[in-house]
Length: 328
Image (cartoon, rainbow, N blue to C red; front, top):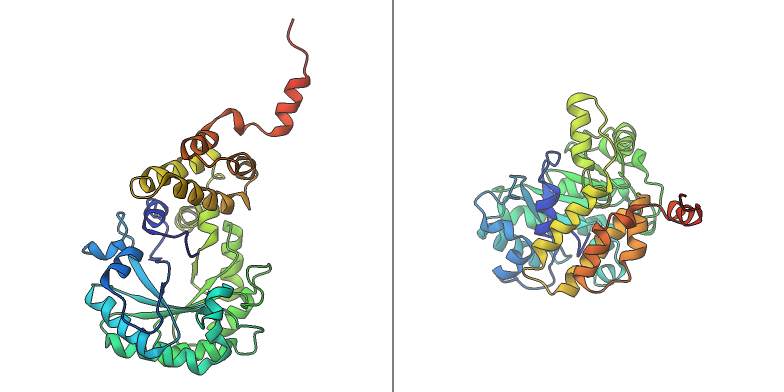
């Protein structure tokens, strides 16, 4: 989710009820204590009294690194800046991150996971919770339970498990039943993650994993109303209608309006395409819009293409209309 879930996106996604908490993009920790401005850039919510989105959803700061000493230094720095919860990323599958000994690379040795979590837990001295996120392993699942137990021994108060190995990346299927095997052996809460795109996916993930809670990532970008849809079903048992293109276009336009005040227009256009690319994976209308929008580099032209009601017509219908004889 690097480069996608910034403060603006978090604010927009949490405007409607559904999320209990949100996590920042990871702060990359190498070998030194980072200045305050780095933490504020990743988590502007630190400047608010509650460290939450404008709608009041708590925001947890995520760290990614492998050096226990450096992680501890930065955990203390984050604590001084007012962070209310720290999350450790042992799940990132990106090759660049893994080559530099971060993210899922630590899953090859559970002892390293435990040392990293223990260092951060000791650094914050129990003043805030420390949580962790893992995958089911690096190349295979043989160490999945060992890594989960290592995070628990290190002091993690909660564990998010993405239901694939690093080698599997984001290829379906997600192995939610494996999360269930881990949950049964741990004392701390386990949260299921991976391939939750719809209300039905949510229910299957909960059923197969036995987890009470799930974490949404790409699914929340593909359908910004997925969390509210789940919450509405939890409260009422009713299914909300599918998210229309007009609602998707509205949130993209709001995103552009917020971002263009601080970022170059070309950068904002690129970010919109990145978000739209997630939407198109699960929505035919978004896929059609993406095919048109990806040609635009000018932000205003891109937004016009997204908001133009004419482009909303399926291509097959437009072709049929051209062939239909004109009325007498």
